[in-house]
Image 1 (cartoon, one colour):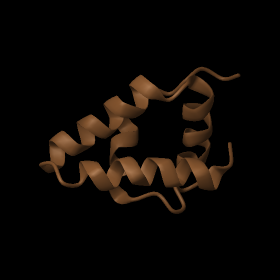
Image 2 (cartoon, helix red, strand yellow):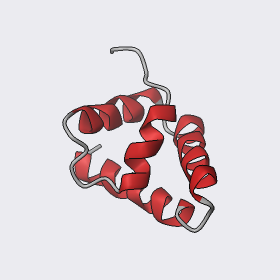
Image 3 (spheres, rainbow, N blue to C red):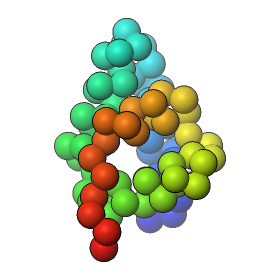
Image 4 (cartoon, rainbow, N blue to C red):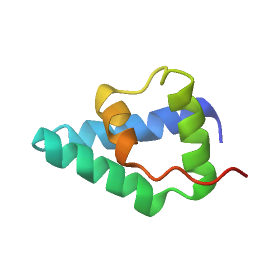
Length: 73
């Protein structure tokens, strides 16, 4: 999957979660990605985050601390 597509998907989740109280939005965003994104997607997500998180909304970057980092491929 392209990095642009992953950023778009994460940001779409963030847009919805931003309507929640802040702490709840962070937790729900991380839970959604943990529950529904396969390890390959999360691995690629963390490549984006580790490279500076270009294009990711602030809530996504904050939630990344609660997202499970998959083991190396």
